[in-house]
Length: 360
Image 1 (tube, rainbow, N blue to C red):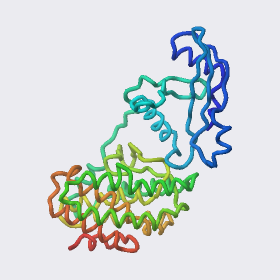
Image 2: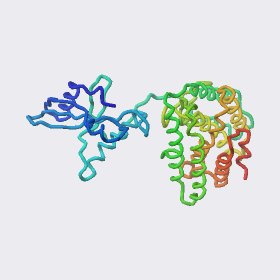
Image 3: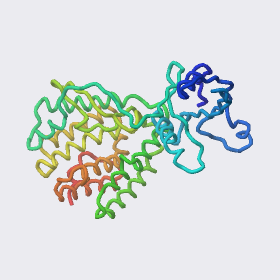
Image 4: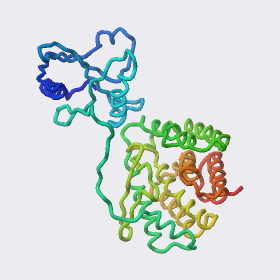
C-alpha cells in the first residue's frame, strides 16, 4: 500500500496537530525506489513516503509508512494495525534504532489521526438479551430424551451454520493461514499445549506431531474456505424466546474451515453428556447425532469429515485443559485425550463412532 489517502493538505494538518505548532509541507515522495530496482528484492510490505516539511523556520524530514494487505499475516486491517502499534512502542527501546514519532490511522475521509498516546484499545458493543445455550445443555445432562424445543434449537443452530458456511471466502491464501494458525496460534493448539502442566508433556508432544501431519494433509484445500464464526460454542450463543438466538465473540478471522464451527458446538454435546452421566448417550447423545446428520444433509459437504480431526484436537484440548476446567475428574480428562488421539489416527472423523473413540 503506497498510502493513497495521504494527501498534502491532510498531511499538513496532521503534522500541525502532532507538533502543536504550524507546519508547512514542502514535498512528498516515495522512499527507496531507486535502490529497490537494483536490490533483487521482489517483494516488500509497503512503500514508505518521505515527507519534507517546515516548522519554526526549520526544514525537517520524516517517513510515513503503511503496510500493504497481503500474505505473511497481513491480510486483515487488524493484522497491519498490530504490527504498526508494536513498531511505535518498540523502535525506541532498542539502542541505535530510528525513532517512531507517532502511530495513527488514515480515516475514510482522507484525514490522518494520531493514536500515539494509546495505552490499550477497547471495543464497545450492544447489549444482547438471552440465556447461554450452555444452560440448556446443563439441564439435559441427566435427561434421556430431548424436548421438542431442544430439537428445534439444535436444528436452528445447524441451519445457521449451513447458511453462513455457504458464503465462499475471497482469498484462497486465507485457508492455509487458518490451518497454520490452528496449529501454531497462541489461542489454538500450541498455545493450549503450552498452558498444560509439565506432567502432560509426552502426551501433548504426540498430539502436536499428529496435528502437524494433519496440517500438511489439509492446508491445500483452499476450495473449502468459507465464512465462519470461529468460536461457536454454547457460551457464545444466546437464546431468547423459542428458537430465536444471537451469537457473540466471533474469533480469528472472517474466513476459515467450516469444520471449526461444527466441531466446536458438537463436541460440547458430548462433553456435557460425559460430565452428567459419564457416557455418550441420553438427550445430549441424540442432539449430537441429530446435529451432525442434519449438517451433512443440508450442507452437502461430506468433506467436513475428512478435515475435522485437528479441529477435534483443538477443541478437545480446551475441554481437557486443567486451566480451563480445573475441577474435571481425572478419568474424564484421560478419556478426552483418548478421544483426541483416536480421531487423529483415523483417516476421517465418524460421528457415529463418538462413543467408541472414548473407550479405553
